[in-house]
Amino acid sequence: MKTWLEHNLLKLNFTDTMDQPDGFTRLSFSPEEWEARDEFIQIAKEMDLTIREDEAGNVIARWIPGSATEEKPAIALGSHVDTVTNGGGYDGVAGVLCGLGTVYQLKKEGFTPDRPIEVICFASEESARFGVSTIGSKAMSGMLDTEALAEVPDKDGVTIKQAMEERGLNYEESPKAERDAGDLSSFVELHIEQGTRIEKAGGEVGAVTAIACPIRLNIDIFGKAGHTGTTPMADRQDALVSAAELISFIYNRALAFNEENDTPLVATASTISNEPNVMNVIPGKVTVGVDIRSVSDGLKEKMAEEIRKKTAEIEDTFRATINIQTLVNNPSIFLDASVHKDLTLAAEQAGLNNFTLESGAGHDVMNMARKWPSGLVFIPCKDGLSHHPEEHASLDDLEKGVKLLAAYIKNKAGD
Image (cartoon, rainbow, N blue to C red; front, side):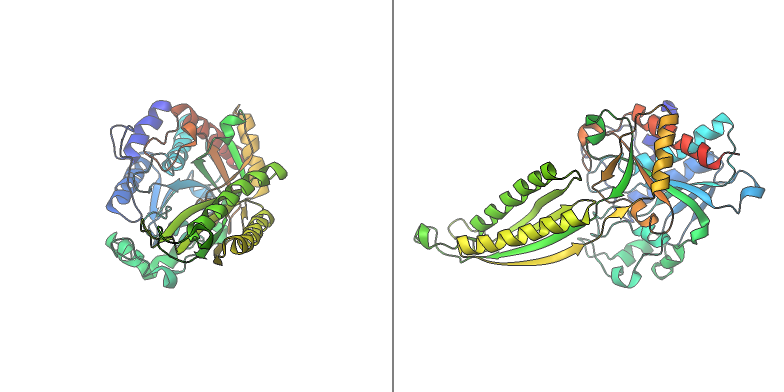
């Protein structure tokens, strides 16, 4: 199995070696994404799977065990093959690879499922090109707002609509990729963890219960610009000093939240702009972007409220004016409890130590979960590193992923 996984891992990444100092760049609807997508199609065809490409660019590889079962709702596995700029070759690819590997292993064992099994390669999961994520799975689950997204550009001014049409797709037809609720009985995505919680807990795999969607704040801090050499310290209204106080508070308060609560929370002051950003001018305006995540919407709201209270204190202390805009406030997504239970059982049957956890990052499964019973499985990645050229998942861990998914399919599609 490891030989098969290694061979096809290289094929899906269109490379002879995973050692790539600059990583992989397969942006949404780029020729590079389509090359990897074509490799997915080729591997699936070699396994005698039926291939269908939908109107949004998703590819569905379907194992139909016999005409009598063809109309039954399918069990679907899958993920994506696009990447961020200079990203790794496992984020997304691991799920597609292990999905295909599961079908390969079951066929090799002579197992015949009682319903179709699908492996889906979703288009455009990453937001790196357009700032919009999971386009393919949004379309499949009926969540794609084509009117709102059509003219969203990349850094070169190419819009989503143009990029899709460059790949031979008809943008206006993309909503037709939506599937009926009766098409699938369940969906499971396998992904690298992008963290270290599984390994630290002594686990081998992780069945995920929920996906933490963010609250994002845009915070404008207004002080008063002045000459750095002539303005007395006591008379200053330094916007950057106010921002420094706020950034430290966000970090330290998030640490405290995790000591006070069982449910994890992360909060990050992740972007900053400083005006006029000149060596001899006191900063007059600073804008800070803040990302808050937890599967507990209540904890997210509490953290956001504490940030608002802190800004009021900072205004008084440093004579600043602070405006806060909520950019995003998405409720977290809880995955199907019965699928989680099934995945936990499958891990046990495969002889794998499961560690149940939540996901701090979004994945295609969060869209699929709105329409079908869905689950998410994590396998470890080295040092928790992701979106980086040194991202790595071992062949041992990829094989464990296949073992878990195979046990899951046997339980759910056995005679």
